[in-house]
Image 1 (tube, rainbow, N blue to C red):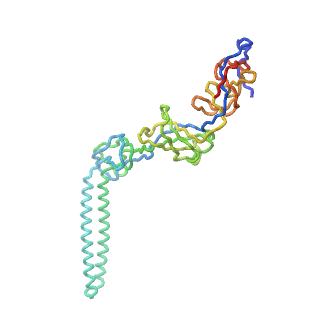
Image 2: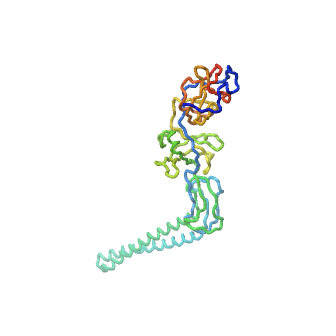
Image 3: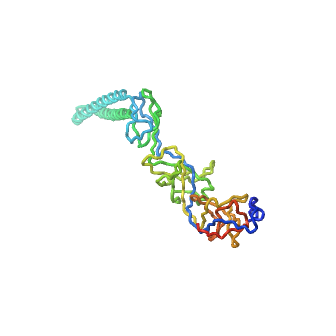
Length: 357
């Protein structure tokens, strides 16, 4: 492949003496293994995000938590005026007691008539009526018992509690407001341990990783925070879409991370690094050694005549401060890594001691 390097003139045309030899530093490259990775921007979210709505309506008396504070499952968040529900409970209890008394009376009456029907002192019709009365009162008792249980539940629902551990959200209603059952959104609750991260990879990125991702072919998931530091705990994939999103051209994924100290909050933007394996037979070069031309990236290799020769290369991603060279080099090649602004194709270079990378 012929590289058109307009800015690189032969030594005799660059103002250098004809016998000038450029001192340079060289890397003697050796094959390496690098992890197969890709990074994507992701956004965190709570593992559970719950809307807190009251099961009963009424006047909101008190808020019993601080906005943004952690709460425990079962902790009371709000108190709704219980007086109407206490009255309803007393009424349901009185109704239940009446039904219980009627049922017991009907049972006694039926038992009394059983002896009379045996001696034929009463008609069959009278006994049948007593049996029906007993069945009706027993059914009414069951209904009263259900109403009593519902009244007890309604009273308990005046204490609105947290269904899960999490971080509380903003308070949406002021104390004294009239709220409606099942519709008024009081606040939200986010479970932040574990924390979830949603991210996606394009089709080209998936090809670099070896194809579509799933829980089995991903070896490691890391999270890089906004300050550039890596989160100390590794994650796991807990969702991988089975198809490419047709509108975005990406595979959507989600990872879960432990978050015991609540270091990560929902809504943060982070970077997610996924590792699927390793690639052997690649080379690592300092970033400054890789140059650009109209035809692509290239490096200067020292040939057998100790001359600088441009060599096209195919790069992968960076590993630390080095380029990963996928193709274009062979083991033992000596690559020039400094004085590159002065180096020209065919220029003699000194036999400075090379060192391996």
